[in-house]
Image (cartoon, rainbow, N blue to C red; front, side, top):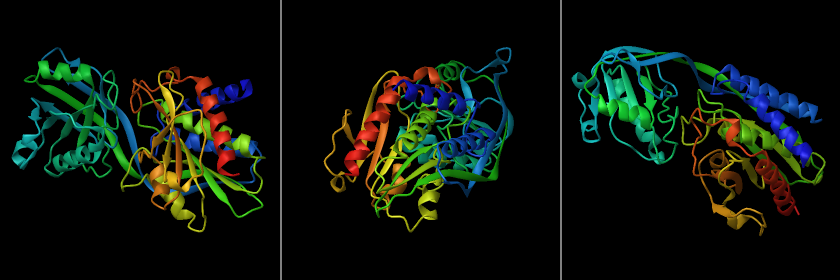
Length: 387
């Protein structure tokens, strides 16, 4: 167990070296290279980086200042994923829910807009739609209030809006502190300047295969990318580290099964209803019949409990785990496999401190012992699945 903990710490350190592992960034390519190198060091012969097209994002800088308060920076403001460059000054146009119905071009053209209401986590497509509508009407920028129910109120989520289809709109987010500041100074003049761009990119899933002597096959996965401008320790360096240790521990186990290990890119944004990386993976291997998919995503939270989400439970044998079973989550790479009718298992943390997708998602929020216990359970559950 001590060696397992040391290995996990090493993987987390290597994966979190870069300030951002968002799609198209140098950080996510470095993470892919590290995963490939580790698979090869573990002795896997069938290792590959499988390319697929994606949309990358380049971020340079952002400044959001109150011109009527000595150019004070609006606290806790961050750009949103796939924001475009903008440079706009003036009194913001405040848009409540009712104002979004029947918006006219003359209301928002070349203006800074503040979207003045909350929406829940399931409404990401709604927020993307708002950004795309403002973009089509010629707005210069939109500021969203980071969802305090789904994310921590202490820091803004860079994924609160993530449309990859914006043409010119600058997009930013504020959490609680910034939202209060803007509300108290709603008639002030502000300057928002964002240097960012999107580009056609090539992403890579990193795969390793342990061939078996029989006909049965299973796949284990985790995504290597993270929300922009975050360390992404929990979401999802934790899962990637666990995937690498599962590969090490299962390399010589259950020799009649073929085991696929896949580190997916581009989970953190969706241009379809499925995560891009895992969808590309299943499309690249239409001949493989997997009996189950086991996912590792956002686990090991220092505060909170681990759970095991089961999808298509009726197709799984009766299982015993140290963790409570939870319903199919349909929230990550499990979706791509469920769409093919494949049973899914997802190790995940339930925590009151939802720091994922924010700059507070750091290694300091993780408990290595919990991660090690999770891997031990995952190996035991795998043995039950493959008996």
